Image 1 (cartoon, helix red, strand yellow):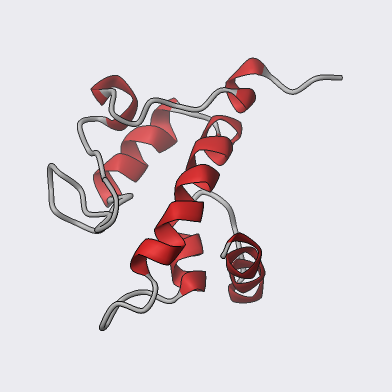
Image 2: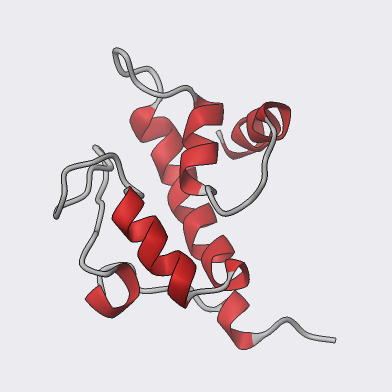
Length: 106
């Protein structure tokens, strides 16, 4: 049985219909609209209502691979497990699971 098409296609996170107008970019990962760390709460709320986890996983996983080296090691910045939990907010990851994902994606 194959995965649903939405799970295989990367989302266009520059499209306001997908993001609700809340877009973040490398290397700072700050929302252009509200200036909160991205993915920001408005982006999360917007996508939670409109997209399935299966649609978010491939795109957020690709972005996470870039976000870890961009954000780790900054003064007062997030740790790699915190970055994983931030970008994969929609998955119930424990601290140990987030640490394991971060180690795999470094």
